[in-house]
Image (cartoon, rainbow, N blue to C red):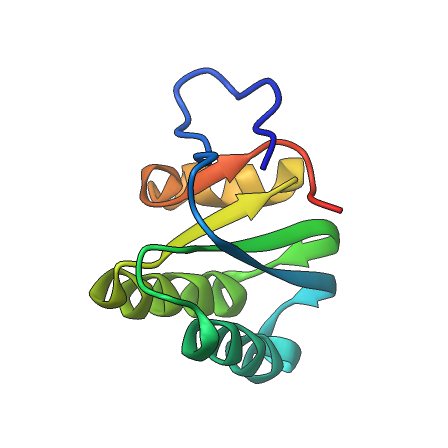
Length: 115
């Protein structure tokens, strides 16, 4: 996995781990939170310990507190399993939401989406 140029001060994804990619499109909001949770839970269920789950956000247009709550909840489940969540290509709005809620340091970032 290429990490590209990282945003200063943000952790970046490693290159040594196995990975699964979850592609998100549209809004991560109250209306779509359960669908997001189900997709991430399925990826987590199939992920080997110590692997990365890359959440490809290049086609995600918006994230509200419901979407963030899903990400934070799945992050805790992943930590228990030794799996790392990587946010790939987060939008400016997503980064601002993470900064505003002081949760930006809880995730690993990859500034470019994976193909």
